[in-house]
Image (cartoon, rainbow, N blue to C red; front, side, top):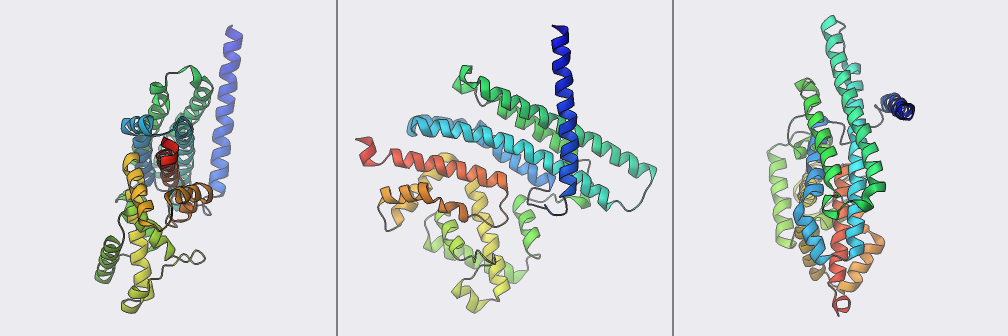
Length: 338
């Protein structure tokens, strides 16, 4: 028995070393090419907060139990597991990227800098170990899930993500203030794509917000509409009215900011509220509800309505909620309830 245990321990340690070596090699090699929206630790922390809310939200599970068919509930649980694994992978990639970036930005060599760099790498390695063990735990849990009560099936993913989030927070405090952005998520996204806002930007943003609020009933309708103003080839936005009163650059920047605002509000929306918004949207379009829901499920055109800088975790959160909301609305159709 001792030999079997020792063999298992050695196998796990070897797998861990291979995983760490491969992660550092792959991520550092593509660091300059892959500078996506989650390459900042504060942004990653914000997303972990959103994921934990999705996994831990008892209202969502109660709402599903009362309104969704069994197939939708099962799909939702599978998507939650996938979201947990995706979050762990993104955490590993983000920490590795930041460690490699800080090493590349280091211009002076001193004992102090070398010591600080070594401490950062040790902390990063500690997080990678947690992510690795978490991914193994989720993989094992997936096979043992059948024997676990449903009310407890999200306990392990939630605990793993909470532990990783706390570790990321600890590591992020070790990085210099001027090398990571510590503002809110929206400001961080805007900083990537647009210059600092001025008075013209503030006026234009207010105009876009007011126009969208007057013409459309809720955020999901507004996001769909503003996405239609975007050229998917260039990523730029064009609004005929704003184009007459502003420069193309100012109007484009204002619509980008408003698009990001609406998107973030939808991502953080509770599942029941998102379902209600989608229901109101279907009431406002000139098409049969049955056909609209069927087309949404088949075409999934809503996947093309997110902002160009949307990160993978937030899009998966939103798409998961929309898919379940469609299943709930489909189950409420008169022909389904009879």
